[in-house]
Image (cartoon, rainbow, N blue to C red):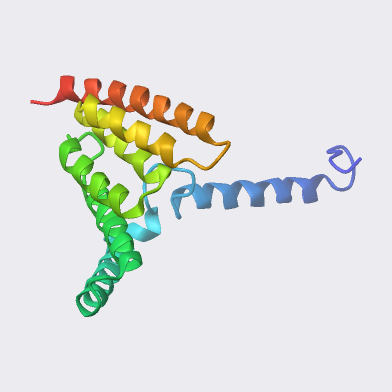
Length: 179
């Protein structure tokens, strides 16, 4: 057998397992693998992750803003800018912080109107339900179903229903925890 510890290979198998244990332990402690934190012991000595991802994201936002100043009608750059600004804001926000669902609803409404797609209106349903605006959520849901491709209406209706339920539940939990 390969792992027979009674034979001549006993020391080789022990050395292999010891090496694997050291590598796994080193990966966990030195590099921070498998944890909820970013970085490990090596990052503590070299300064760690001081927002390197956010720096790259900020540079991309700056480029997109510059491009948008040159051609303000470029919808693709505007979409990317909104997405990146949202990503940057959420990365800076604490996990338990209270969001601003009404502002998110307004942004989603602008994007949905420009996109004129069922996916855009489903997103609006989510934020409207989170903000507690059932009228807008219902109207956006109906618009999403109307814009759905032929044969996908049933799927879109299910997505709208799910967006209303999940986000309304999250909104009531967030409202209870807000000051």
